[in-house]
Length: 215
Image (cartoon, rainbow, N blue to C red; front, top):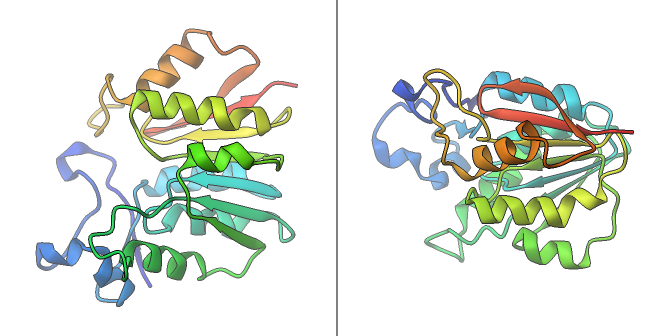
């Protein structure tokens, strides 16, 4: 199954598609009638893999069709666990829930490590969470309040040298993000203005910002 990556410039916003527009529905990806649509660019995917490589406890919030989760699974430690948190609540046909189906199908293209699916909103999953995390990818609800809540809920589980990747969190020339997007605002206020001490930005690629907890 092919994966089509998001184009980095707004003139070709989102992923490239071929054929009739109705094929954009995830049902057609599940049936193998179109490629999986990644929400990230190919370069962002490489950045995720650089920092997730060899990690043992990884969490992704916001799974979509599973392209980024597959990228993480391929490079994590062979004995690691990838926790995928998404309620998959936006399906118009809940009994079919083609988004969930194509996500599982995509992630299962790799057999590396283990995958645990947590079909809950991230704020609810955090209430009973007890596992240390060494790599966290935040790509769920993009409102400022939701990004802030995900940070407050999940960042305490990361030890020194833990990595957090924010998607859609910076503006860049020709890009699709804007300065008033929730992830952009949170990263600007928290990391660029120095409000969140003990963390440093270590890489920025297109809309992605990756930060690391200091020793």
